[in-house]
Image (cartoon, rainbow, N blue to C red; front, side, top):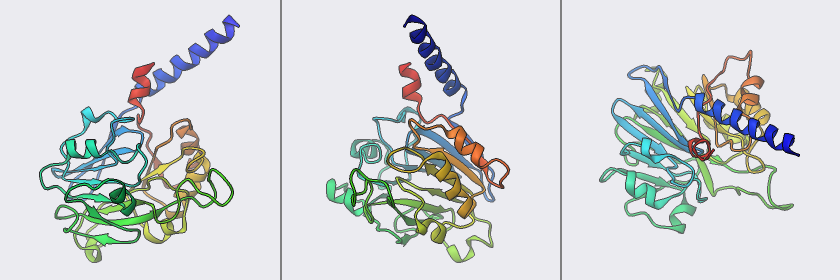
Length: 266
């Protein structure tokens, strides 16, 4: 029994060591200015480009918001507490900065001055700083749920976001404007292939039983071919399996430290 306990402890320490070696930031080369990505924790993503800060799903329960900067734009993907934290939004939001909520999140708790976006809607400067276009991409379960006929994430409740660093989509491709897709809680729904094309960076979840396995997320990435794929929202899963499944493809995988609190707790 003692040997088993020692072995388990060694595995925990080894895992902590691996996490400690992973970076929490990465930079993506892009025309007009590089994009600095910071993994705040679990589903909380910070993007910086040319002085503009965008944060997706800032929360305090699973993220280290000490690394977060005052945000020019905040996006919320779902109503669950690992995505929607009104207190964190209030703390990080610059005065007058737009906050984009799903209809369900706004119904749960109204955020003063927040903008509601529904699936498949697009907004430019009305809901984002000048130079950013936001599209709400459907995010939901196709197969997984707590009981037959039920889903952890039903249609129309949550959404991912496709951000293009250009206020004119019709000229974005010609100008090589960079784009980032943050999927939110979803399986590989058809809307991803429809809406997410030629994207520079994609954040994909793999968190059973709620979203996808690493292998499923890899197959999803192969379908829309982002230049860079970053696994996130993967607590309990092995992102290295995602990387292995994409080995030999044209997709670069970058694994970041999304669980600093878990590592600190060890």
